Length: 514
Image 1 (cartoon, rainbow, N blue to C red):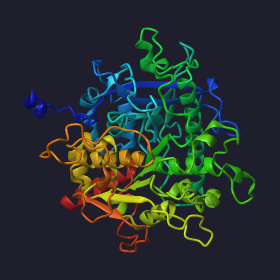
Image 2 (image 1 turned 90 degrees about the vertical axis):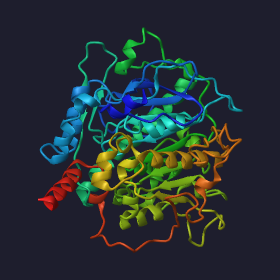
Image 3 (image 1 turned 180 degrees about the vertical axis):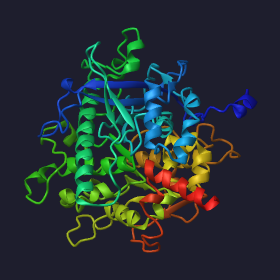
Image 4 (image 1 turned 45 degrees about the vertical axis):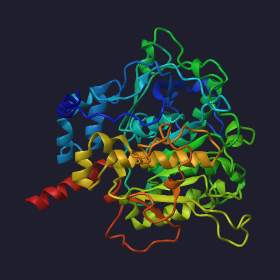
């Protein structure tokens, strides 16, 4: 059947490389069943549910069908993506030829499969929350999330209803109630008072959602009843797919949940962990928190200096808002520990590495403190890397599904390998935090000819090595500020996943060819 796969025009995903099969459940929980951890009301009155997809290790006998990458209703979703890419430009025209093929793209997970009993010492699976970027959704990072799940991580991928998703649908518990939609919200990338206010508003929603989803995970693990109103759960024959997770999630011990995100999701992750960790600073007149959890909330107990934090192509503009300048100047929570930085990872695409202002802001955000009041002066600091010939899209599903677009427009290469490098580094960060995950396969280690490694490598120190060219095309960076490229040479237009930006890139190419 290999030759058939080669001539099949439908985009597809490679299989995951971890030892476990991967299952997936779509979840949408009414907010009325959850207790918000913050000290303020909902930032948005029309959000009656929170939505997320769960990727998890499944039983080896699981043979359920995969999940459609374009969720239902597919026509509306494809239309929203076409608009996101800029109706009328060349990229939208190219995208318009794909809808019939996109309808059949499936994620290689087993839909509503039974979860595997954890072989870990704690008898629980480690958990990660992964926040998407602009143009993302609960499905748009399925390959990185599924790859981690195949190595023994339960990955929770929220779908943010802040206007950053091309379109999102809100279902209600009432059978006959009309489905609501949240459309994409265009906000300029150039800093201004209005832009900062708009991004602050989006972050308020995102942080509130993460707090509620954390509450949902606790209730799910404690086997407390939650109604799942996600569209595809109507076909389970009445089976409650959430109860199978009870007492199997490592979500109660402080510091055990990992937090990760891409682009705007990276900014969300930074703001979330810092807002929670510095929750007592809400009385400062100069600081107006976007999220203020209560002292006795479970999320305050969860986030500690030991919490693993992983930032993929961190987009720093939302963090520069004057409203949260006090928080921006506080160190990441990991630096309240002697091992500060060992559990902090930033992976950039080459496009973001060449965007000098964003690179320097990223380094400022993740660097260890250097003032005279430093409690632990000999901390190792963060891990910062970038894979060469990679684009902003390379850390999402788009690079794998449409390699010909990312190669032609952005010069990206080896999209599958880029994602494998990302997954390897993320897994090792979790191991550094004493979180038990499966070994890295010898294929991912690029050790195909080495005998005796059938079960993989339990510790992948090489992926976090700072030795130059320890791994081909995997470049380690220090935290010193970089001034090699001017703002004229590189900027957000070269990197961000934004409709008008993609359209402008294609238009420039067309003019050059004319």
